[in-house]
Length: 208
Image: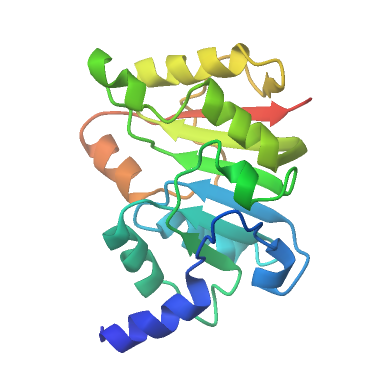
């Protein structure tokens, strides 16, 4: 694909964050449809398919690696995926400076890096500050849906949600059952299944 195609697609799909400027959800999508996030969009297959299945929703996908951002944008369709934006941004406490409070319906996090070695746990996405950031942007009653193939990390994630009374687990512990026939299998889920690791699914609702 020619670079000019990527440049043209970037004007449609790339959401650039301006420091200390609040993102206007209605303006960037030119509608008032409910908004969902995917944190860690990987190769983009999840957000691409979700946008096709749910055209009445808008989606912002967050990905840090420039090559992945470019890959996702290249594979989005200007006509079919008009309800998608991709953003190179790390979701942490800084969301309060650039995104509206209580403006998101659902947040999807698929197979975040488990950083399995104890000395690397400090790099894990899920911690008290991260959950505070999610609670800030998520509407009351909104949900966070998480998938991981790493059991110890699943236990870690559940522990952090339980320590914050703003969240309610939608089922006890976690589930290894695929969540419905409409489940979207990501690239990373496919790889891990081939290696013998079954995905674990968790859902949490913001109640306060």
